[in-house]
Length: 95
Image 1 (cartoon, rainbow, N blue to C red):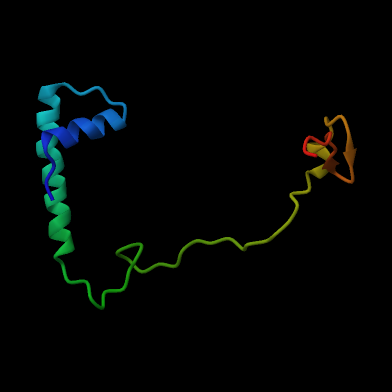
Image 2 (spheres, helix red, strand yellow):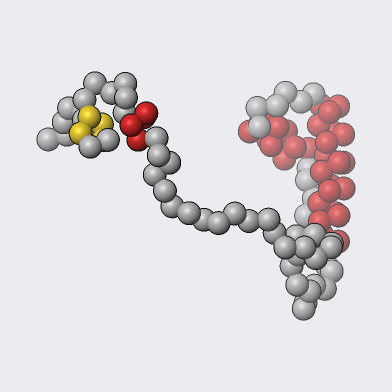
């Protein structure tokens, strides 16, 4: 896949980036170089290669997933005009 000048200008416009004609020509070459490298990566045979997050095997640092209410319900509704059992009371807006 290659990028032409019109595509570079269109992408720049969509990204809301002001690009001069000289800059667009330079970007066209840079983008084509990047896409060429990605095409080379797609040609590599990775059959049987396990995905990894690091070149050195190490366990991921994880925290225990604990569900709690945060213990801040009273603080959260403290400034509300009306509450009921730590819920905000609001006027009905849909009939």
